[in-house]
Amino acid sequence: MIHLQHSLNEIEEQIAAARRAYNQAVTDYNNAIEMIPTNFMASAMRYTRKEVFEIPESQRQNVDVKELFK
Image (cartoon, rainbow, N blue to C red):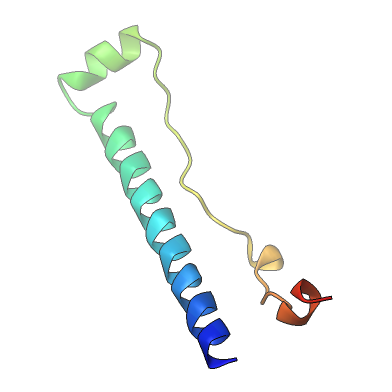
């Protein structure tokens, strides 16, 4: 049981790290297409702003691990 808890915690940390990395990449991209001189090329290539990854509060819930073992 302790090993399972450790594994779940590690997976949650990896997902959070991946989400942070993705959001940072999107933020860097959005900044780049708005700054001079890259904004001229971005406009010519019709690049648009992207949204960062967010989970609405209504969808945030704990996973029921018991359901995984049925």
